[in-house]
Amino acid sequence: MADVKETLGSIQKNMTRLARECPEFMQGFQTFHNNIESNSGLDVKTMELILVALGVNRQCTYCIDAHIARALKAGATRKEILAAAQAAVLMGGGPTLMYTTEHLLKTLDELGA
Image (cartoon, rainbow, N blue to C red; front, side):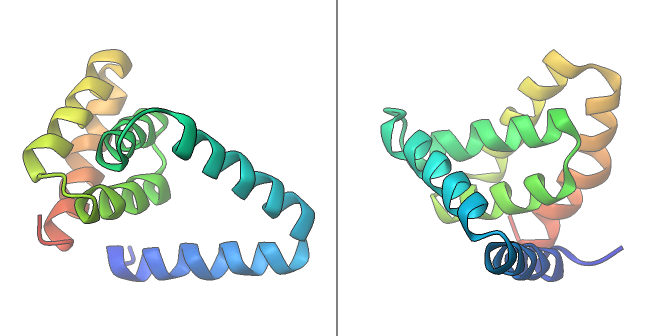
């Protein structure tokens, strides 16, 4: 399994590649993404904590890595990220708990949170 920093680099590389091959699609997605973030009324940290919870709930390792990194950059603490994961487990049950114990903790540790 790749380390988190390697995965984050891979995400960026693959998104850039897809943007070259499907520019209209990726521009539309980026516009959608930016619109949600800028018009949500939420600060960046809160939005990223929500996205961490959704990534855990959907069991998306790429989402978990990317949004934990962005949440940390926005000032979230390890405790706040774990609280977001706990909310995901509340709504997602046992499979979500397994993702929290397996992947989320690894990502936090590797990013030094």
